[in-house]
Length: 332
Length: 151
Image (cartoon, rainbow over all chains, first blue to last red):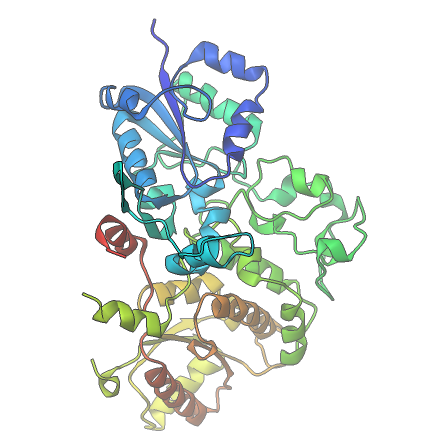
């Protein structure tokens, strides 16, 4: 019997998702027994041509991590979609945009300016920016297009399953691969993780007060964190109430508040809106000024509530400024 | 489109006990107000899920108006305080996403304040007319840009 073929690919990501696969440890050997890895650029020497040579749908599954920004990422996503019977959005970035998605707070041109011209460590006297094409004596060089915005995988291609987390916990990866090999996958569109809030898995759950009220928000570095008490009860912005379980509460267990990498439970359209709603409801303040003072204690609200999900949110990105819009409209 | 022709769309979420009743009174009193406001009735301003506000913007609203009972008057004791907290935090998020504070407005309007509904709706319509339309990007549009936009 031939083993089912699978592929791993990375788009706009940090490599942590690949690391999570390796973190399966010896269980990875069991996975390799069951499947044939047909493409995994980070670990094995396959080329794009090898994928192109496959029949359409020949891959049992393609696991794609990372958000989509460049034209190369988009092309690879489309290619793998064609070759795979099932596509799994692997990790927060593929699923919701992830931390790279916070680039949607800025214009692509500004990002290039900072990265290639303004950063203190950069020496670029001619102010060169990456260009799609450049002529050099040896001929013409091509780079992928740096897209105008960061998109989730399902804003680019049809996605069959979602494996959340930054990175996805090894246990969920192993059960997803097993389910795939055994043909026991749930309905298309399913998130391969438990559908309950993180608080239900949290080792601190018993210490969550019945009526939770927050007098002052504090950041983790500003306070000596009690290792047993509910983090919200200590005034830390813990997004456990709005976040999907499945990570065995790794962060609260490690004395850090949940930042929401597992995304929302089912039925929630916009994770950040739900998360901020949950946190705002806990404020022990009634007056306008008092509320404003508490809100001001939350540094970087977008980065707090949309840390992993800005591209997937209802607004998708920061609204372009009027000046820039007008400039765009007059441009040919 | 010139600015004078721009007709802002406002989605208003009014609580059934105070502001929605006040809007009825506005009509009964034959007080005309800007037709730019589309009212959605909620049982309480505390029912306002911040997702509703974002969905309104996503579907073309230029502004969102929330009307609830005055502090201390909530039919459910504290729903209006919850709305106030959520809106304050939501506004902080919207600010960083480039959406001006004036596009999300919270007003306390009791059932007897029909005139205030008129004033607030007219005022907000004028303010938004000044601000201009809210243009949100769509991932699809960005996809088109990715495919062919010269930079």
